[in-house]
Image (cartoon, rainbow, N blue to C red):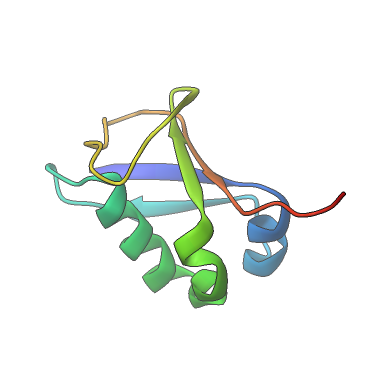
Length: 81
């Protein structure tokens, strides 16, 4: 399946784009999506372990199956005070 992942904040800055399209297996999980994202955009590897993902406006843990045509967001770590 093909999915589009929207990137925000530092992930967007590191990638140089606000979205990426990925091809995943039909039974892919968020963990698989994370791996495919890092393969496609190695510049995100330093923050990969700290990124969260959302699917259809809900947080999606690594074991969550990816739904075709879902609205997927990559939420990078935040800092500040």
